[in-house]
Length: 417
Image: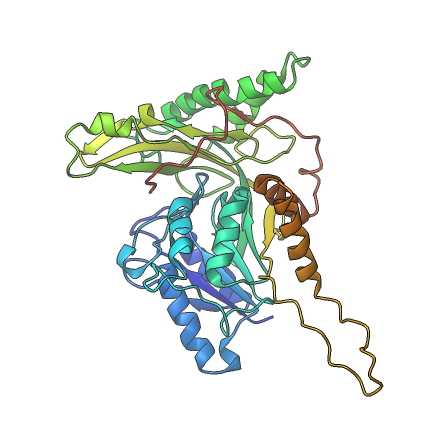
């Protein structure tokens, strides 16, 4: 199956985690066409321009699978810009929604891709940490591509590594907690105090969640502490079987704002997505960043909330059925065919039934006309394109827990980086 892979950024100089370099080696080994990021980083507009140019050159320039390799966060964002003017920026759910709202206007933020570069047989796959937890975000990515067959992304952190002979792709379970600074910067006092402080904060968050989930298990919190302690025991910022990495959320303060603190207090908290599973980790316990977490004010016009993440690599081959979400992008309804022409005998032949998706559109219209709620309809559609459950997702539904004890359905922040 011909595929093309876009590296959306490059590793910074001196990086201990060669994420993009290792990803390039991995995809070249799969005989994928790999496109390096330009100086300053790739953008969605740059990807669309390249795909259009390749498709215009002939059938050999179209691909069954389009891969985007990016850093991401658990807060529904991909770390690359939407347009070329936003190179080096962040693609948030709100930014993507805004782009879709203008895509059909005379002056769109970004024109949708569509044929011939993308058809209803094209598969789009995102390689970025945790972004698969946000179904609406994946759907909107698919709509910007112009109705591919589906969009797939991991529910966990993605890891690319090189063992000296081959390149490998793995996923990792993670535990995230608020942090005063970038945890990847080697501390002058060594890593031991970092590990100790991290376990203490993570134990409070995830141990409490475990105890609440299993009220009859007196040792649930102790088991979580033991897991965290073992995972952190040798972790540094270098990618290995376990490691620390940094995420952050940024609020841009308008230059006209006289009281930055008052402005930050109006920002809606960012909450990470979760899914139903048996383990106690970022997969099932939400993280939240709110106004009080923006403690890094070194730039008076850009306040930052830091998050430290401990990752533990899962030593298993990765497939799209393993800790991934695939969202099918439904085609737009086609007009129902008109009456068939009358035959020679004067009697009209039996009517031609409309396509299945037209029947669905008719049922949808009748449901809404009868007073049905759009939210109920959206929930039904989401259930229809849900992936087959695996051993994790087959567990009974459990409540989404977080470290703040507040509802987990708050909106994402206005600006994320």
